[in-house]
Length: 226
Image (cartoon, one colour):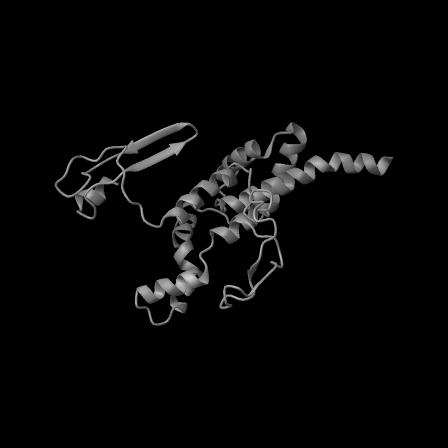
């Protein structure tokens, strides 16, 4: 982070990393060009970054297997009790209908199309669809992932998913451990077995699904005997 100050991109900044009760802060540079040194408690505008902050806060319980990105948000956001959404993306603001499915955290974290259209207009981009195609270009989000896979000789998660699922099932059956512990040890299992780590939500869903099945298995077998 100090490189941004050294290069003159910003006069100063505050960088904070917090993890499991431990926090580390860096405050290189000054509060303004030629001004006083930056302080950890400095107050300044951060503009429209609530989405980034909310996304980071959301992914913490996802990583801990306490929230899934495809879960309904009704229990978390009960108000308003009856939600309405636009009938179509370009509909007038009063043309609203009940959603055809529950709203999920994934929906709330995505950038709406109207925002992309406005951004394209502000940047004088004649064809807004080129901004939307950014997310469709596979190499953009995956180029580093592919480089890591080749450099370290890793397998795709899909190639080892059945093997991993059996490990999770056995672990849950024999230990009764919760999803958080199995998730953490599962990451170690994937690394040990040279498997490319999937996305956090993918891994969390796999662990939760297989563990739930393993927990229910003895109950189902007992029910069949009765």
